Image 1: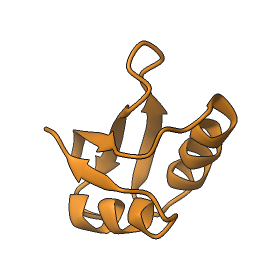
Image 2: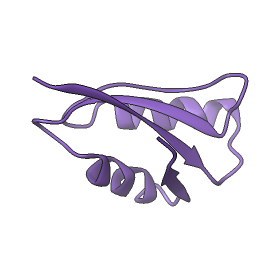
Image 3: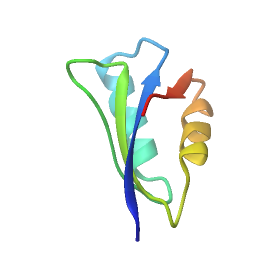
Length: 74
């Protein structure tokens, strides 16, 4: 297992309930270890994932599939 982190910028303005739903959906995705929004900067999300199982492109596609604008920041 090789774990790495990625920061994503969510373009949509989401309320707390919507952010928790995104965290839950993404957190249960194959290869994702943890997904959490930054409470002080609610448009930023940190995702830890196993690069042997998934890729940043797959994770971005999963978020975009939830009708959200998203891009990788780092």
